Image (cartoon, rainbow, N blue to C red; front, side, top):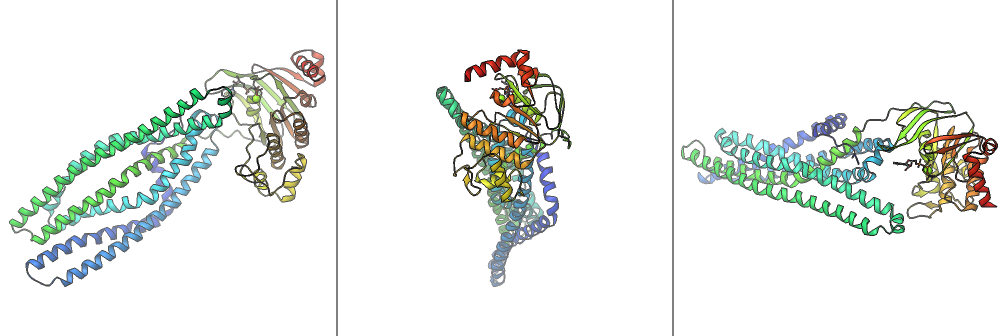
Length: 555
Ligand SMILES: Nc1ncnc2c1ncn2[C@@H]1O[C@H](COP(=O)(O)OP(=O)(O)OP(=O)(O)O)[C@@H](O)[C@H]1O
Ligand SMILES: [Mg+2]
């Protein structure tokens, strides 16, 4: 199973930069406010140092004390404004990213989604976006503020005495060591955690989606341990990331010790040599110790930031799936398939040398035993699959399959998916066309609403087709699910809806096939017979055999 791609950090940043571009001014203002706040923050320790000197010299400390209060208030206000500005900036950027990824996901080739696993895509669109939107509010603003303060602190130390900066900078190699140790392990560990969580989602989806099959075949003993195994490896992946960040903090403590010790020792010697006052040395020590807070903020957010970067890489990865070449639809209503060969993702060939031409307005029925390739052919005609070989020349086409999705909402909402500007009268006419006397436009359907029978869901799908009004319609198994009374209703509905359209209908009831203009018979991925009902019955081939068996059954 080949997963969807994951972007490199560089590619991720390129996308973020691009999304930020239209908001450049906003970003510059936010950054400016944060820089001002961080600069004001330096004044606190410096004023405290001034107070120490004044106490030492027995002068009044009212001035610097008042200034200290003012600086504290100003700093707090500026930071608050800066943080709000940054997170206000993040939200629309994230919204734009989400919009892009969802739009791209909707256009992903069906093969790709099946191959990569729907769970993977869902976890990207769900979990990863949630991780990012949390980070945009909770990690990015404090991270930005703390990094700025850290940088400016070393500038502040230099204004007291550049040698203090040098002493304090001894912290850097130890921190670099700690961070490099962490970075080497954290990136892969978090990527792994996200990937394993995607696999767990897929395992759960498989079990929930296939619940009936699993129960029917008594597969619980193998299915549940699989979910359990995936869940356990997901837990193990989380534990790995936690262990890594714990080791990281102990390395950072070592860095703090080295930095504080060297700043204090340097301050001691500078005071002794009369290069700086005791107050200045105090200010330097305070400034430096303040960096611990900032570093702790970075530390507290770095996990989240890392997780967010991994999520970002996965979202940008969705954008990187190459767009399938647009198979140019034309305004015509004919279908022309030539030399079609298809294999699912490297599997065996399931369509061989299929040529199929359907004239505008013609209705073709496809029959054949299970596994002969009917659905595959229908999906190729509907452009749902791009065939491995051959040319597809099909105009505006719509597909109705057995896997009908009823979207949650009112029935009117559901129908309007096919034609957003449809009036209520048009919706009602579409329902009438498919004989859906039971349907009320304002009824709530789908999750939490009225449960529709498979036949009713099929009727809705046909009504949507009617509204979408494509020139070419492909129906697969539209009548297979219903009992025979339901099947007759659906057949009638299909007849009405297909009127005036070019149609390819996978027919499971041969009475439906018999009414088509032409019937093609598939066997093992090839079209083995083609002709009208009368012709094929007379030919006494595969279709005739099917027909005799079918009518004998009914007799
Ligand atoms: N998504 C898929 N991935 C891999 N193989 C597939 C996939 N879908 C179908 N196949 C294989 O392709 C072949 C043709 O299947 P297809 O579903 O087109 O047959 P069908 O005629 O529609 O059968 P049925 O009457 O049961 O619906 C089968 O061998 C099937 O196992
Ligand atoms: Mg099928």
